Length: 402
Image (cartoon, rainbow, N blue to C red; front, top):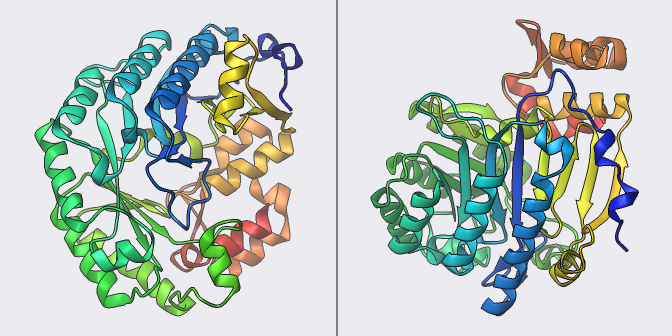
């Protein structure tokens, strides 16, 4: 089922006075193979002609969205192309899509600073020519999904690239002129222990990237890893080892001048991911492509997940929406608190009061006091944030605040 354009009145939406510039997310749901832990909307093994047609449909949606009254009232701070594996499509298709987005949307232009434009890539799907084209088109941030610096670990999680591919991709990216590179790493992997993880962190830091995203492996329902876990055939590190790995990342990356600014993210000064910060601040964003979600000043819209259906709707001049909801003020307040607590700076109590007319103490009452007395939350500089102890137990705390 999809929603028609007339079902959603974009014209009545007005950006909130306190809202910052928005972001744009483009979803390219194609991979060469699908990792056994992945629960994202992605499809492996499709023909290049199908992928090209899909990117043409996404470009059509981008141009239509750029013409909407809500979008025309907005400035945009970032463009993020994720997946899937965006670097697995033909270069000409992704370059055309990027050029259309950068031309049609009104991006902020600061003195000597272009908007942040990120493309995700796997190490074995890039080459110097592609990276040069991306850089020339306006991509200034590359996110490389290395995940591990051990061929054994990579094989254990179903990755098809090697450590050598990791090193080569990074060298090519620097050679193409990328001065802002993120590396994705994962911990809590099958067969991984603290010594292996420590070595991985040192190897990643030695490359001197500007940013590192460090994720704990989570077993999501419906994935091959979930099936293995249900049969007792997935040997993951125990919780105490996983917590120790989280602490290792904080310590080792801090010693290498990386600021821990969000639960899973570390950046050199000035290289925090602008696109993700907008998300954690519960800002507005436009989602383009199958399965992508948009949030327009509280109106949330999800596109259909099937690339076939997505293309069919766009080609028939219909909106590719699957569902939509307008979040009431209290729900948006809760989301803003929870997402803001993911950052180590926490959430501004004054901003919450200005935006929603509520503070955490007013809304949650004694729960906030209990979490503070348990040394899980703390208040400093008019901001509410997770304590060092709270960061280790973030998921449990968030469950209480939902």
